[in-house]
Image (cartoon, rainbow, N blue to C red; front, side, top):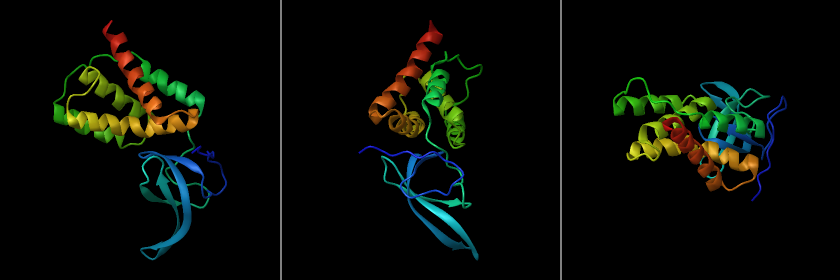
Length: 179
């Protein structure tokens, strides 16, 4: 099913608009409603995460949906892939495994695209390409999947192809740093 995309602008969000949540990736607006929370009425936007069917609700200030952004455009995708493809240097000091995982989880929770790319790079670097621990594999999946879904929608490609593009770009960066 093709996904209609809608850029975020200064108009109110509309049902069926597709935006990007900073943690969950591409989402579709399914309803707009008012809620009373702690005695204050506020506008909310109900969303469904694309490719996941998880439902979330975020506050809206009337014009913009708080925390959401427009889908990536091609120039932004190219810039992110360039960042991902830069040679990955070895870390100056090796932290303990538990500290490193916790640090990467916190970095991923910021919702910033550059942090998401750096988490992918760090996991690929530290694991030598394919993570052996379940925690690292899960964290890599959490880092790649939302971005891959967004790239798949923006480029009209299969999500698996976008996942492979991100993974192979990071692995190629690791190989070029080793050479």
